[in-house]
Length: 566
Image (cartoon, rainbow, N blue to C red):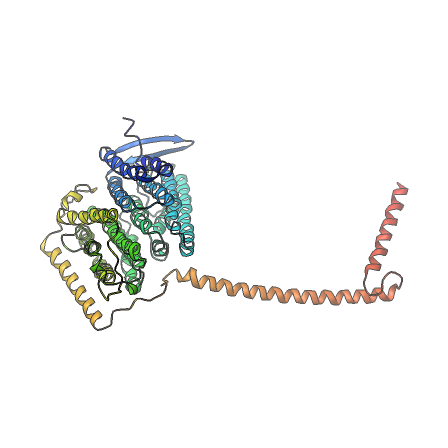
């Protein structure tokens, strides 16, 4: 029975230690065996609280298993296995140890039954994942990693404050429904929102994911935002505010993704867009909507991982990732091209691909609950996803103009990881009942009815038509060969400029005041010196040191006189 009480994160933390102590093939074997063995172990775990104890006045539940946490646990193991296979060619202990710790932290967070345990793994997620950014070992990645770490730690600090408020108000730390009826609720909501990349606090994602290593971005895309989605689904289901926040998240990244030149940053914007769909589902809060949010998170880990892997393969083999510098790679990288197209079809929600069977649940729930305008926004966002992730990514990387690069397909381990992800995208799309059986609620949903298939097919057809027409007419927005800033313009450009100007003014005022004081002091000293010069010619002529010496002599004489009297 004691095996059941071993939390899912423990094998990965032990694995990180073993990875640090081993080298070569043995390290690779350990890294592959751990997620497989842990997944088998998790599959056998029944739904229940498996570990709880009291620490001081706090009742802690570090390991709680239910249907919601199991869904994220399963897909995190899949993501771990694919990411590890993808990175087997690496000889970088820093990345591999950090990846194992990061995976374990993600699992610890989704199986946490209390807010204090959640906070610990929340911060561990930040501390372990930043090394996947710094491992690229460039000045840009270092700066980006620092910004990422500051924002992630800030999210944890806010979560801790919310946890303490929550304990004071409710005398319990159990992690369940929280809502927005208290200060604690709002603090926890903000903390989750930062990690979920809510609008205006999303820049850590587009900033850091594009600067991480090739394999680091694959891991990053799977865990951090999905832990936040899980936390929102646990604590704030049915919170209507999330519907509008999620709708905004689905739309605004589209415009920046279209003009972005860095294809991994395009995918980062696309990741925010897809998380927006999940947030909408959680905000609607019905059984169908929650199922849609959770299943879309499950599918997103796989198809977004596949797209990041394919772009990582391009970067690994060519050393380039800007759309303006790529093109024509299908001639020498045919396998990567096909696998990327499968990922693009999945994220675009083509029928028979995984994205279709989960995204349609959220949109159906929106129309059922009377969110007509939100449904239209989601429809627009779906067309936008097809433009920037479904067409732009494969088109500019593998087709478009021939850039002249003749790079081959990546190493076999990278191709194998992408093939596993692609197979899952197709398998889930063809047989969604296998995924639906794992969801928290049984809704009897069928994605393949005539209205869903026709509506989605028409949307994709007209989106493709619009792309072709805009491209032929030369009206498609060109990629900007620069770092595009959106809301981060405020703290990366505006705020430093404002602070620089403000301190320039402060230093100028300080310099002026100092000069004025110095001038007044000089005038004063000159006056005293002239006065002293008139009083005494014996001690000093032009400086009051003579007077000071005289006063010191007087004080000493007074002191001696008083000591004699005593």
